[in-house]
Length: 326
Image 1 (cartoon, helix red, strand yellow):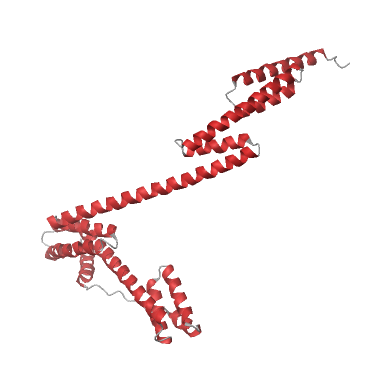
Image 2: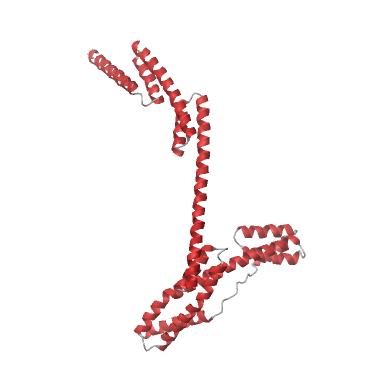
């Protein structure tokens, strides 16, 4: 019991210190490498370019430190001054987001921890330290509600999803008409934003599909000109899968099928001629080519089967009539 009480007291002491401290200001310390970098540069452009690199890498604080130090080496430089003003605005926005992220985390922690503290207080009713800490936590959590509502208002244009998290926490603390109304309004806005994003994504997919169909039709046309009708059919079939409702694709498919049918018919007749002249193997090869052009030609399949049966019988007869070796 003594060890448990010691851990509780230590825990409450830490939380007391944390909850009693004022928020620490977000400062940007100058990295050591900035001084050595500035000693090596010759022009202000090198400073500006390096600062832009830091910003592109998400290191806005580092970029600002470099620019502020660079303004001392190149005083009055307009480009460095412009970048400082621009990056300070970006940093202020980032700082606001970070501070409110911490606010949401703290609020959630308290909301989830209070029931545990209440159970602890119920089980140790004579511990006035726990009772006092519980009241302090409850009071502190209630005091966060206006700040969370303000977060939802400030961040609506900057980060609407974080703004909703703030309002959601505010509503969990105190289900006031204001927090309920603001939470509902921002939820509707987020749904509208997400709907617009889905619509735009569908438009992009549709544009990519249309571009792919156009490419396939071009490739199919080129294949037709080269006499590669089967390859052209493969391209048209893929285009039809991409857009089954496209009138142009269906028209191209109809034209190609007609052309394939004529080619298959010509090959069918050629195969018949070879078969009549007892060139059975050559006839089978021609019919198989015709079948590739038009797989729905049942009569071609029947001819191939019949011709193969004849070849098999002839091969069997030859095998049986060959004299045996002495």
